[in-house]
Image 1 (cartoon, rainbow, N blue to C red):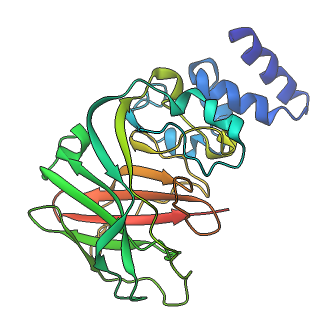
Image 2 (image 1 turned 180 degrees about the vertical axis):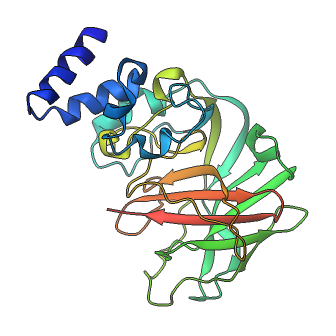
Image 3 (image 1 turned 60 degrees about the vertical axis):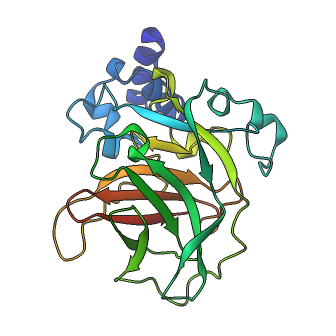
Length: 259
């Protein structure tokens, strides 16, 4: 891998287009590349801001009980190892109809997942129920009560956004500790093959870093999880949903990005 990284850097200096290959190397062994090279790779725009870009934070994957979702475009993609990581811990309900209604469009919210003790992450809630408006193309905010139940709060999304489809059927998933190999996942390189349903760790951005702030403040919210457009979910034209949270205000922000 070191020899390949050295060779590719030489090709870049010669003006040869090897960006895709360089990105693959960077995902697996960024320590082999200088910061100047990593800075030119879109996926590292956010990752380089961390205290130690070469040591990504811990992460868990949601592993579905039935294996990879049945709505994948190509059945062969269901064999990717990120859909079959060894899971541990109790089962989690993913999907299904939510309890609350979106004040912007009047549709029932979609249930994402209910986490106990934030899925093992230290936080203020022993339980956090995440529901979202699947028709929103903009960030949406939710306040959570002492039991973790959400209530939509302003600012609301535009009533001109997508019309929500029927809520996805409920699935059962468990959390699997993410091995070192998959701590960094690129949305573009994944190309609908990899499992991008993740709790914690680094976001797999589509349009680049976009960290929301707590409404009425300049306090940046912390990344909590991301869901892909699979397993009955569809974000925009087929993108990702990123969920952020703030412990002090007990608010989550749900931010979609799409292609």
